[in-house]
Image (cartoon, rainbow, N blue to C red):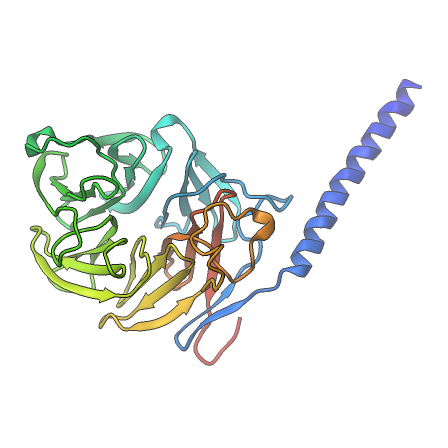
Length: 344
């Protein structure tokens, strides 16, 4: 009798596995790639990319960023930590200790023979730098008391690094100051203030080093600037240069690829600009005002090719895009670049 029970248990387990696999295959059959964009910025979605074998998200709620290392591995930050995927969407590593939670923004940089992730931790109230392969934390950036500012809140939202190693950390969810440190973490200066004036920020939410120009500039997402969200350029010394483009909804972050930049909009789309900051394409536009910019869209209501609250993006060497939604179920998507005159 015991032998029969063991055999029955094994058969039941096998049947459950096959049922799970079959349901995933059926789900994959239903979800077809969606083509979006136009011209040289045309992409196909990859249904189910990065999901578990059972079709569920493996990263949990997302309010973060995406970067890619020299080997092509994709790092995305979720509330519970940092998760690493292969280009095919297989999860191969994760950092979920307390040092890696709530990385609102990330940048990756090779220094010597090591690669480091710099992160802005909004909940923990610090900037951080760690080896992306070992997880070793090598630098922390708390609120710089040397600035002379008396702030109630330090809630960093964005981080970027200049070629000389200077680090820029935006207090975007609080005072809207952008703090500048040297590569060792020594405070150097700060600039910016909260408001809707030309040289003020109303949520300096995202930021990167704009390598499309020489000398390089800071490209900053002024997400809630009124009357419409905008991008602005500042010098590396913190001097206002220009208003780059307005009318972008709620731009959350920026990622550079050659002469192009991807700009996620919290309302549910990604805008791609060229070097003249002309709009080249709009990806994944969500026409539903109830779901565009809605964190609480569950996975059961995700629509292939339609975004909900785009928050982070990053390009790989082939020009493919990885896009993260601000989402309760944890949504990360791969968009494959379609060659001009061809198809994938």
